[in-house]
Image (cartoon, rainbow, N blue to C red; front, side, top):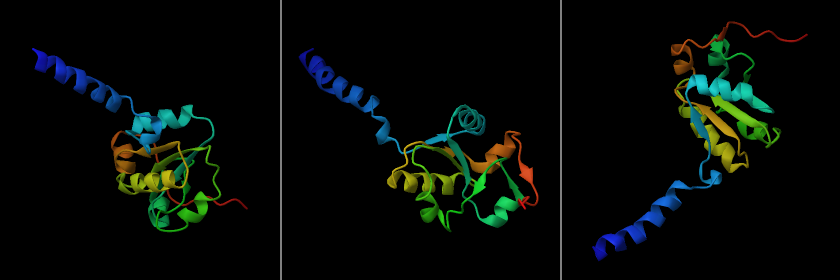
Length: 138
């Protein structure tokens, strides 16, 4: 009986401290399509970023997304984006956007959300995409 109380005495506080992690211990959220969209729509000062290559972006994309390829000017672009903005990131499958979210966290961004499953999951869930050429302002 003493052993049981001893284990409870030592294990319970440790388990509670694991459960009560501070937000800084989590680098970014990874949300499925519908939650990703709702969070984006509900968040003021947010920025939707497609981290795929330009040829992928031209094929199909989420409306109002800005293309900043993970292989290109992301480091330079990150220096120009206000760190108070919430960044909603996506790619094809979720791998690149998750990697970019971790990198941006290291650069000081704290409001980061990655689309779980990428645009593949987005389309599979029937969420809207924009296809075709990008209209350029004159």
